[in-house]
Image (cartoon, rainbow, N blue to C red; front, side, top):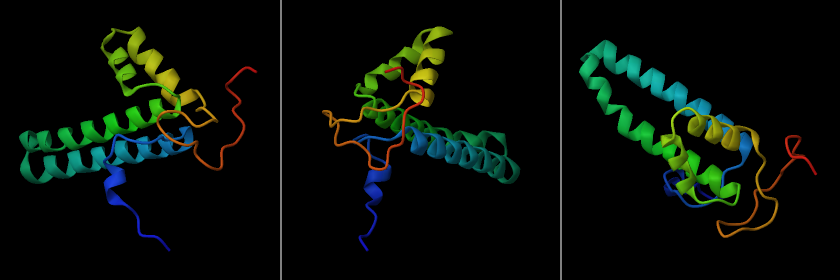
Length: 121
């Protein structure tokens, strides 16, 4: 059995399917909440600032790799800076759209894909 490459967990390279994005986002939110509450309970409110940089990096990583699966650059995350419509657009793109089935400039497609019910043929 091959050993996992832990550097891949922090990398901005590669692709991330919709299902994996959902699960990893859920785990990130849960981990952030638990770390925030634990630090606040033990060291006080100001210590919670230690949680934000790693959470931001991991959220950025998730978004960039998910956009790669859609065949787009991670720079599309800059749409988040557009008030109201930007975050809504990014949420629809990352959470609901299926990825490209063919190899793109970001890598080979993810194995085990199912039908995409959100895409009109």
